[in-house]
Length: 381
Picture (cartoon, one colour):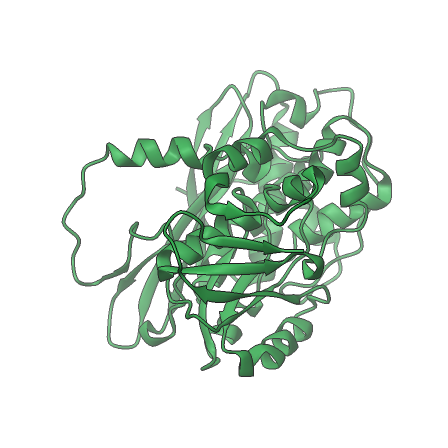
């Protein structure tokens, strides 16, 4: 169905190349006409994900349907999207993502949710082609104008990605929910699964960690204007390097870091490849101020649930601080790409990230042969 998204704040913004970061305002004052968006939800952003351990139990009880040979990527390795081959040269990528508010500004909430949803297409190595909006709003609590701004924020990101929102679905919901069904295309030979990493590969991370920590401080109204600007900038930066990275012969696997944190999505990559990964913690980029806020106690409940779900598979070095563990499992909303590539391709991978404006991208570890089934992620101080 076609949806009227109301006023479009994106029209007032200067043109931005896909993935570029626009100048960000200070934290907006909450209008008195409606409650804070974050006050209407029990969790925000990708921190809303069902805990990995619980999700695993749920999926165990589902029946396995027969899969057609054209389905190149399904649910087998918890990959970022489904991929269905249409022709010898074209495969369709389909994914969906939605969540509750991580910020109070409705326009920015829409931007963040849309950026996060489209990321899965990029993580598969694909080019987005269109989206459908998924909207659940408490219509007896939020004014129509506020809901329109959420949709306008999503539209602004889709324009930056070069795709239309071709329709969608809406419901009256107790909590505010917004996201997209995102679709894209990729050559079948350039699909980047999260299961194709190889021992000896190097790992490159595209964005710094710490979004969950900053969002926890924001919800408690303890995040500075500079911290808010950093949070908005990273969560609305489209992962546009994906297709260019997929075209590199030395790139073997990709995923994006979202609600399960760096450790959780790194483990998915390791399990899928039947390998292990080592992360050099000192090389992992963090958002400015994230560590300090974590030390002040601004960590999410999702971080703790993440560790409870997969901590037994992680080998921490002696004396690894609790704050570092919280950052390792910190849920990222619209996080960066994690690339597994041949050692000879690292410089080229970093160059692609730099060309797209990802100045914090860094090599953070390597893929190792699996030595045991129980511990697939090793942290090195």
